[in-house]
Length: 273
Image (cartoon, rainbow, N blue to C red; front, side, top):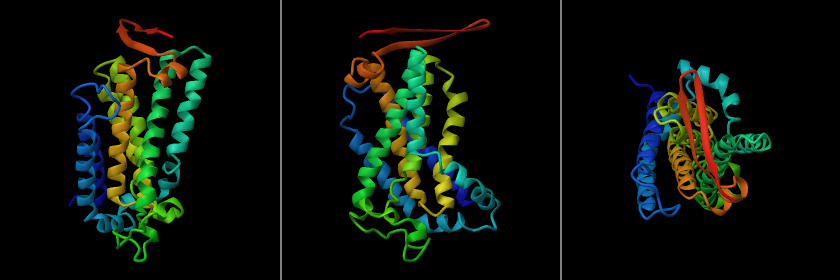
């Protein structure tokens, strides 16, 4: 029998797969496109469908008779620190060091990663504030009532900030941005780097489920937001390298390409100011 843990991992990967596909057809002329609302509607409808099983999955993530729960509860306090703050600050720190050392391509990657995490986190905050969904362990009937909402309380009460998961959106935003940046520079490298990146992106959300902070549908919706922003920020920025924010922070890095040659690699890029 497939455990709740593996079902959760499957839906997170499905979120990444489908969200990625929706930006693969063409580079958008504007950051948000007309079909984004439809895509988002489909994903949030899917989250509603997953929510039917939220209580059962949440209980399984607390059942210590399962090995994954015992291991997960030992590790959750480590992975829960991979969040919007650490990823954004870390990305900006790498960006700053790269700019000081004139590593422009690294600055480009780090800045777009931090930008993606910040955008996904802000969007999640805007949703969770008015929605006010109660966290599993804080519900009046803990781990049983996944439909306890206190509308507008998400702005003032931490217990009512379950949907969507910012830990999940941040992790997947970073993974999607890094994967897309690598693919632009070295097509074909996405698979060997993307798979571990997305696997790591799932760990903060899973850790929050072991801690009773999120339902599975919270993690799924967060994953969608993260992948959307990670891919869109990178694709839009490189397709429109003269945007004001890139001109200010990056000097409009454009056309960076990584070329593998016998015995090493070479990196070329052009800049305009």
